[in-house]
Length: 202
Image 1: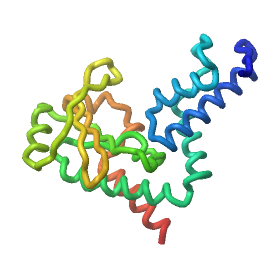
Image 2 (image 1 turned 45 degrees about the vertical axis):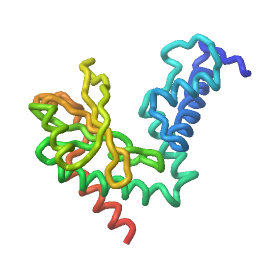
Image 3 (image 1 turned 180 degrees about the vertical axis):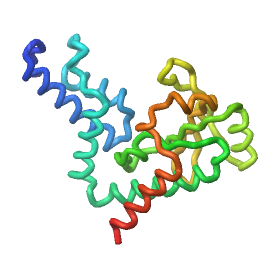
């Protein structure tokens, strides 16, 4: 295995790029999450070497690598897959209007592929109302918890919708003011993305 010199700027940049590239492959090919893909790439490239924090690529760099990987290897299938996921998300968001849904993640930013799921943030005064709504709609779901950006636990409801995996991260209603607007899109924004893609295909 190559011995990388971590105090050399060029070498640090080189290995950071290699980690980002390999992590992007895991994400595009297998649907791995960013954190898991990054850790796996580090393990494969560097083994158990102790790393300086600045050697790891950020998610923006990995996201760009995912875009490039998909364009290179999935250019003939990924756009249609992305459009399908966005159309499915739009149907679901319309049904969940009362919970102020916002789309996040790969389906929003355009990097969704064959293994991607739909991730929505919901904002409501009572998280139980979401569960009751799903039960009344005949949807069986699994419940888990994810840590929010402020460290608070977020209840997550996961289920299948039109043969696609869906994850609803349920926030308190007031949290809508604290979420980064660049990382989410409402139904109107999603519809504009769908219209752009459909117009491009004509």
